[in-house]
Length: 375
Image (cartoon, rainbow, N blue to C red; front, side):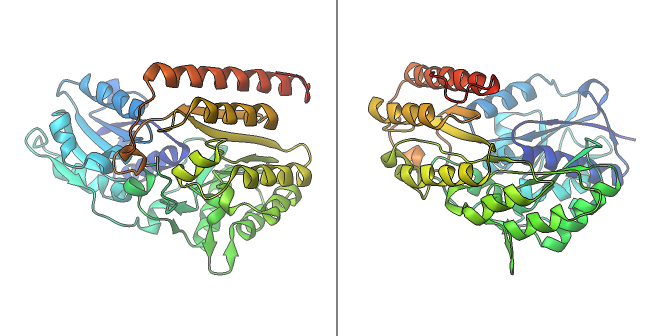
């Protein structure tokens, strides 16, 4: 029996994808290992959101010297395709996010000692078969990630996701609820719904709020969460569901990205600073004491010192419970990559540190219960 180790890098979607792969491989008779040392096959499930994430993967793959079958799957696989073999000779196969269901078949083809001479890439599928979500495999026995939609059609100018995961596709609500019920039956009382843009969900007359209501009503569910939302699809009805559904966490992750209207427009985010502030005012008014977290990018191409200060001031005023703050990294195929990135690495790091230090002070203050303390 071939032993396989899967190394997962990136977002919660990748974590769930790795679980899907594990379920498929176990069903096909492979053994999943907890470390690469005992494995015959090492699969890297990868992220392309930032250059740093890609560089780390290439470094890790380069540390293997031909002793194992190496697979590159996920967003980097879709991004590089057959060029991955030129970048790293150690790689035996490549499979994009929509092609992960083919991995057992790929490994069968590579079996029997032929893998040193063969290279296989599968990056052409446009959609996954629904059945791959129903193997019953979840890494955490008490918590389950459940994908409700795949891909993204927002085309934010800095984001590679639409190019590596395809356009937005919604799973049928009956299949989602069936998967949740199966996870609950296996002991997972906590569920997190996943999508690049969960609150854009639509299955005929069932929107995201209705899906939350249906999931909340399932017997045996103790806690419900979701990740991640987009401001352009948020509204008061959505916030009321967060308030009213008893099993749903009273928290919201609502990416801001920038406090400058000009930069938001260049990012193709679809909202203004005022619209964003109105949304979070509405959320805080409806969901009393609800947690609020966000994402922010510093050093976006042409971002001036003054525009960075607008972001800084907005964060200081808004007082997020937590924020994921990133330095801009150009991504292939994106519109932002065509804009001259003139800010130096040191300049980005300076802005990143300044905003990160501010958010740490705010987070510490809120945890200590000082809601209005100066930072």
